[in-house]
Length: 268
Image 1 (tube, rainbow, N blue to C red):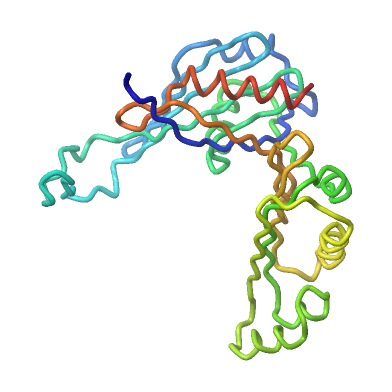
Image 2: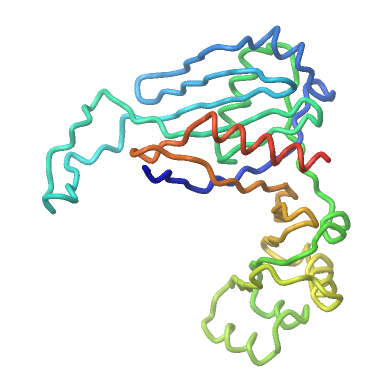
């Protein structure tokens, strides 16, 4: 029996609003019918495949540029370099998956850096509409939902670590000895259940928020769904393991089946 290869995909979810209202599947279907859409210039191409299923809009899109292009590639079988078979006028689009849940007006995307590409697509088809992504910026809600802690990453002027009680004065002084203007502290917890002590530590970090350069707190809620708080907001995370082929390209059908199943559990 042939082994089925799988890889992880992590989706982040945020609210998407159209003219300050939640999204409507009828409105989207009218302005953005199912099919393939292409946006390209002399050096970059974006290819979007749009499909509707029940109360969801599934978007599988690729984006690629003609450069940089290394003239050589390394052959693992011969252990030698060879001329790159990709021509200078060809691109190799990278896979990104996204889905809109019209029941909650949430958009889930496998690469948050590609949100702009989606927004640009929507703006091309909703000419007179205001399209806004809204992060959930609520420390209290985050703490109440936090059942286990994965890691905390904080950047600050070194002496603030001791002033805020995050580090002892001795350790903070040692960091200061490196004459760094900003230091980053990373703490790993490996899914440790949050007790009163850890909750108080998280609360103390939020109390120092205005003094800290950046905050990233990762954990899971009671449904074991990932949560991420950073200085840009609070987003939900869904982690799936989906099938890939011999070229390590994901199977869109398997990705969406796994993702929709997780979304339904998230909404239950």
